[in-house]
Image (tube, rainbow, N blue to C red; front, side, top):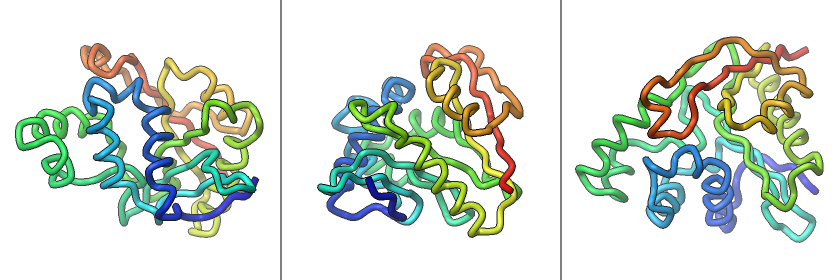
Length: 193
């Protein structure tokens, strides 16, 4: 396995598939149907805001996105939503998605999604990607790294705790839990030595 900064253009479809595989359960009611979500992701994924894990044959095994003051890995803008979902579809989707978006944190480097191919989980790829994100955060001068994990993703939270992340705050979704399929998001932080 090799870890590389950025997303090679020919791997964008694989990255969109992997991202949807990881987050479709959370975003499916808002970003679906799947073909439209895939089209949106192909449009908005930022190659300069991620780190990839590749097999020796060049297969995308995992991807870790991050946020910066210049943007985020899977953010996009209102115009991107309109192009894929139309005016009304973009309006209600945009309103709901804004409720989930995290602020840019000038004190901590923000992880914007970590995805590992289902058949590759449990093989250290997630740990390697988090390690690479920590290196990138240090390179950019950050003293800590931050992420959010939803209450239904127990496996991911266990990984983050093993890697030294600790809960910092928790936010409940209230009635929006019926839309997104989870009740609470926990923000976790890890200091960088």
